[in-house]
Image 1: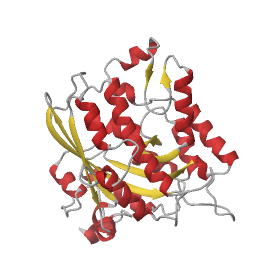
Image 2 (image 1 turned 90 degrees about the horizontal axis):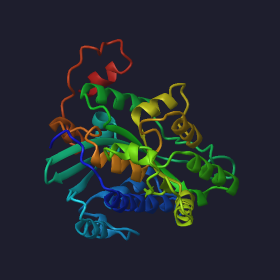
Image 3 (image 1 turned 90 degrees about the vertical axis):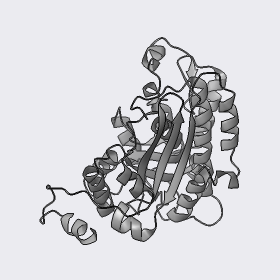
Length: 335
């Protein structure tokens, strides 16, 4: 496929966003039902919901079958056929080869730009309850975070020259799982963030349209430009379901954990406020829309696709790795 990004019209954005957001809500609400799910359980559920071949096994508020029907009716000239392949990595493969819980491959067929497959490595972490009451709070953290794991992911991105292709996925409950004071803080973070932070990259004239106050309503953040009561009602409902599933680029995670601190909910929300660009702590639906339309995200090299699929691949050589490097012994041991 051409390196040019394809344009998503406002109708397609709305349809696709609703699908991805329904997946986010389905996974996040599972954290408040029944026995406490582990990261492996949540990842298994996510893989089935996202994978084209298995998503029909579950009931979604906005299923993929409906997405396809509504896109077929679109007359915006997009005509994009897309699919997602999810590959859950076994613990052995994760610890020795990929450093990731799963690989996600975006497969796109575009009538003008052709066919492409781009892969991402994703490490998933669950928010843990904190305090004596073992409740979720704004100060809860992702306690299973592993610095060595993050270092391996950084090295893989460098050695495979696969930047913008490694991400952390954070499993969070909806704000209904927090005490009301903390839930209010979560909603305040969401209201403070700029809606549609990355959508200007999907449309060549989005910046100009926003400056003109064009009333475009995207995602759950409400309308961009002119807002009505209905837009605000939808935005309020969406904020009540947050933080749900979030995505952070590897660089943000390494920065937050630079002082040896375990990444936490408040730290990542603050990082989102401090960073005006990039995937710092983005809603699941926003990230996947961006990844779908922008070839800057993901990598199409055969060896990277193979790694994402959970198949062994030789580590590219690097003259920069020396025996004194803290990662060298680990790298040389497994490769």
